[in-house]
Every structure is written in C-alpha cells, then in structure tokens.
Length: 243
Image (cartoon, rainbow, N blue to C red; front, side, top):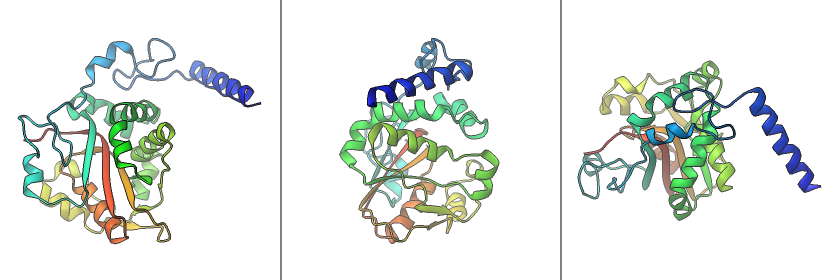
C-alpha cells in the first residue's frame, strides 16, 4: 500500500511538472533539463558564502578574522547565524521570489539550505523553525510569506517542525532597504509579538530571506527571549558582505 502511494505521489508530481513546468530560480526560464529544479547552466552563477565568514552573523569577510565590523561593534540578541549565498549572486531571484509570484523557488532554496548548511542545523539541533512573519496587509498583497515557504521546505528535508504562528508582525514597517541601521532599529521597535504563549521551546532557528544589518532578526530574537526561548540562531538565504 505504501509503495502504491509513493508511485501515485511521484506520478502526480510528474504530471504537475508537465502541466506547469518549473521555472529556474536564476534565469526564470523553464528548467532544463526536465526534472531538475534549476538549469544546470545556471548553477555556476550562484555564489555560496565561503570562508572566511563572520562567526556571529555569517557574513562573508573580506579578510581573515573572527567577526565582521558590525558584530564587533554591537551586541546581538541571537547566538549565531549563517547565510547560504552572497547577496549579489541571488538578488534578482530573491526579488522574483518575493514580489513576482515565484513561490515555486522555495523548494530549491530549502533543499540547498539543507544540503550546504545541514551540519549547522544539526549542530544547533533546534526544537523548531520560526519564519520571520509578514504583516497581514503585506502578506495579502503578495499571497504568501517567502520566509515561511523557505522554512517549510527546510522542514521537509530536516523533519524539524515549523512554528509559523509563534510570532506575529503587528507593525507594518516601512521598507528597510532604504534606511540606515539606526532607522531600521527604530522602525522595527515593537514590530513583533508572541502569538502563542502556551508554546515552550528552548532552541529555535529563525528563518528569513536576507540578512543585512540584522535589525529584523535582532528584534524578533528579543521578543522570543522575553518569552523564555534560551537559544536563538538563524539562517537566511543570502546576506551582504562584512568588513
């Protein structure tokens, strides 16, 4: 019976791919060859973050060292984090993923996160994955939360549950990309609340798409710490370069 269910599940996926071919996260064309999640010719355009990286936030460092300049200057509310790609190599893909309706990219990104950051995830051994939430008005406009889709994909490969309703975004913050670090921090104050007070977790892994200054992760981590979470880590799909 189980083998039959697996057969029908595989057949259904093949039919769905035939009817609705997957788009490549990089070139956005129909994936070639068939059955892959990214065009093989596009794989080389993605730049994984390689050593040296900051031992606190995971940013790629321009020179050997332990921490980036930002992490030397400020105290974070999380313990440690990692990112998968250098931002410039995946910026256009993230833009389409967030604003262009390309929710289908999530499975590829989740698989790659588990493939390359799986050791970090196992080391952290989180009780749950917690995606950074969108404000309800922004989620309604986009149709989905990209951080939640990444978390669900990672969960599918790791078996770690996703607590997508643990945090709620109650403040519809202004776009952060046009703000300096101080403006970002002020913008995000009181942006999140705990929506499930009956959940008790010791270790969580926050999931988001981009790490820039860390203001979003820090604000979410501060709220989670006040709720009793002891160990907070994060993974993002991409981040900028550190000093």
